[in-house]
Length: 190
Image 1 (cartoon, one colour):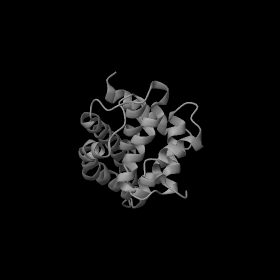
Image 2 (tube, one colour):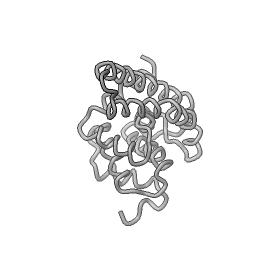
Image 3 (cartoon, one colour):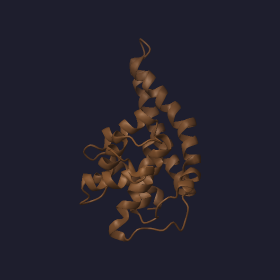
Image 4 (cartoon, one colour):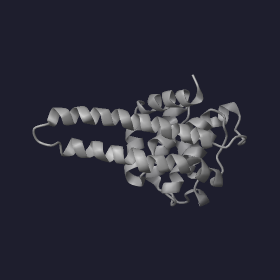
């Protein structure tokens, strides 16, 4: 299994864990964040690929984010439109088309993850094995920070919730504290 396949398996597994789907969807709807990119950022940290630098995150997510905007978002919008406004008299055909669009969205998300992996910088310093959750928290925070430049307690909470499910024995308060550190000033007063 190559890295892209392992990343996809990780993303599918994490997404099904308690509280992760609502946390991801909150970040997606509130900030226009790609869930796929967020899970990539977490996985690369946990896999020992190190912390992204602030400038690295721009080059690492650029192509993947363009792909998300130009391919995934339109597929998602069309699927949602068909769900809310199916043409009368062809509801069954519309349902079948929506299923095809879901499969297309998932295939496009796999491409997005490959773009992220292809552009991820090599040689980033990594935390020791037992501390890689810190790299995951940092990477996830940086990806979210691009869409949410001011520290938002809801964003911090959502990222921390996902991290707790991804990292065995990580406590929510510890995850929140680590994620807060990504924003300048560490989210003082939160």
